[in-house]
Length: 119
Image (cartoon, rainbow, N blue to C red; front, side):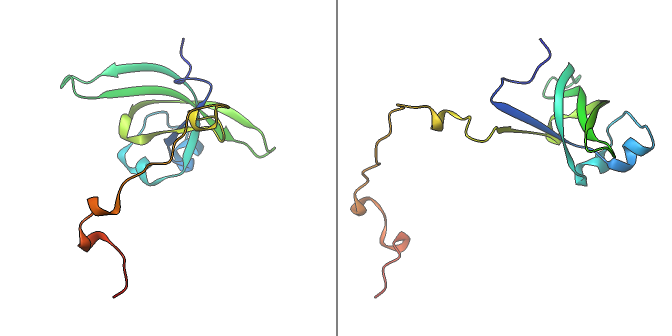
């Protein structure tokens, strides 16, 4: 299955609009400063020789002139270029009946320097 983490998670990738106009399909470091595009799906994940990180091949949503969008494939995307967010109102925080309790931390536990009490 090449979908993202789940139906509650949105993935976003930094990628240049100019690169899309040029039909460039390989991620560059300069793309890090660019707009984020929604990730439709992760096609492939390849571990780098160092074994410490991965690069990805993705399909991203690219807006078109008609107000719709189309898929655009890019490769060699580093993990640092990806962001993952819970969709609005879809995190576990919004589950009905979930246990919540006020944290009761005594004021004495905090050093005086941390308190914001006017003298």
